[in-house]
Length: 171
Length: 459
Image 1 (cartoon, chains in turn orange, purple):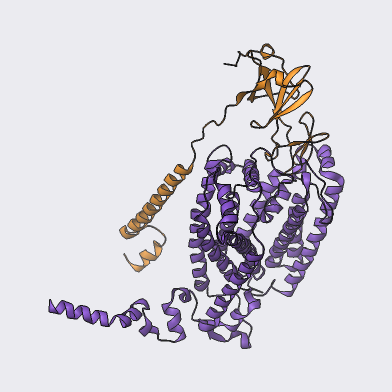
Image 2 (spheres, each protein chain N blue to C red; image 1 turned 90 degrees about the vertical axis):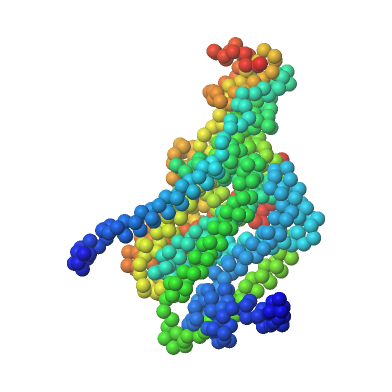
């Protein structure tokens, strides 16, 4: 190959040597990427479901009518009044801190969001209301909550019959 | 047989000389000259043979790189010592911290030194970045600027992962909130969250992952990048910017002029940090309550600006502002290619003036925003604006607007990309510092209290 040809071919894979060098470099890169991928795959956790999303929170008789009870382990509030039982999250919808009770309702100590007594956002960085969950009294007399089923704010149920289309879940 | 013994005897009698020559290779090669010393020592060979008098003056760099390197070395040594007693398990971690703090001999001192060295490393890295940016010293050193940013990111990662390890109230809630912040990050947020926590909640898997990152992966990355960073300084021809004529440009041998100054600075850093650690111990918070945060529950001071920003808007503080800042810093050496004023603090005279005005403007704007925001109350905003606008109308978003305005006006007034970007950077840094100070003043329910005001008692 003459000098002129070589100049013309500059920047192109023109010889066997160039090709082999390129293939070698690509091969090393591919091996490195594959190794990194394998390592990253190992680090990705096999996520299990975590604690059950449907659970009893205690005998219905333990909840005094007209009161609000905080279920510590589940991080939810359970309300009980004439209409029955209801439950909503105690986890601030902003960044997940546990809200505390205040005179008007609830506030979050981490970034200052505040909610009214029904979990509606009043001020602060939270943009969503505290979600309410489907709640009912099972045949065994215990109060059940299903945190997979978000319901309208303030919804309460007396017993399982008012929960349409549901079997008795207390088994 | 006789030959073997006489050879052995000869080797043994020659041992002192052979040890000296064998363990100090190349003595003959360099002799005792300055060049020889630099050539045959690992620590010295990182240096160039000769440096200018300007490079030796403290006011040129303030030695901030050496300070952060020293802090990193102290962190390595104290960290390994702490690993002797620390147990990365949710049921044992806090108890092992109490052991270190109250029972182990020298435990509280080593822990305090680790804490203070970490603070020193974060501060000196930030100042180092500011120094390099203000001198335009990234000019022609694009790769090393990026490596330096990587080191800064790793240092923040080390601070963050180390924060969880005591498994006390503050560390648990800081990480639980940070994990929720990743929900605001599009695309990669969820994947990073899963990788970080190793589960759905902050539990044993998360603690072990944070521990692994803190003691193995991040320090290893840091070591590798430090090696590249130091090597590139020499490859890039030493400090940026030409010395002024006269005495400044005189060349002096790096040994002893530079090497001894560095060694002395390292000793000073060690002495000062050790003294501070002996006087001020690192606090150990209350035992963790995984369901109830304290009130207020504050982030460590180096992340307080982020907590203040997310208290305006999660999306803004957790994603938009950090991403803009990172993008701006990465792009800086490619968007500013000016040679004028390189190596001078804040460049040319016009540049210094622009930066000063921008800084004053930033302070004024911050005060204005905060007074308005706190007087009007986020609640007023929230009710008037619905659910989307509070993310866009708040002091954090105001910071972005002021930074862009400072950049544009400076750019138009001075015709200098350096002055423009430095103005923007200074506005951001001053306002982030302001957000940090406001975060310091936050009391129960994240309400602002002046330092002299007493916090109301909370249940």
